[in-house]
Length: 236
Image 1: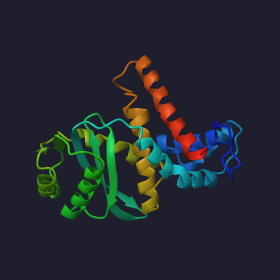
Image 2 (image 1 turned 180 degrees about the horizontal axis):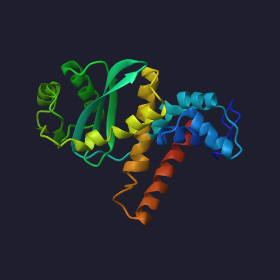
Image 3 (image 1 turned 180 degrees about the vertical axis):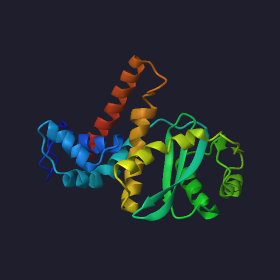
């Protein structure tokens, strides 16, 4: 079935719905920004409709894209950042591999040993244990890593973790664009799909290290992954 076909009980074709979900999670746009971009092209959709589409289909896109992602390298970088959701402080735990692919993110209330164990358990449930794991000097990591990944080389020297720290930047830019995050569950779902989208459209494309021809080729592959996911989610 083509993406130009309208999904059941929807007024707009699948390609427009797919484009709205992709724009919101790929760029630093709000729902109103996405609606304005479409309005410029003569497609009138309210920002509330776009929000409903993202809430309804976002997690399904995440599940489908996950199956198409490349395997991570055997060197992981772990870091955490503080964010506020509806005025309450939370800790966002993040793991990336040596090439910048984001492995997982997890919002928690604390930054202690129990929180570290929860995050590492999630990671090891999705990926095999790494050869090298790099963290900052947070003491909460040391014992859990020692017992949960006994064969991993744990490193926590100064400036070794820049890879993970830089991966926080898209989240900060999105937070600034939206003024503030308002829902804990909504933030977790949004950031997970942002992570998947960034992995295939930014990390895999290699914006700063590949030639123009390579970037075009990788972008077309990323677009095919997204279109296949849209076909599976919206046209099934």
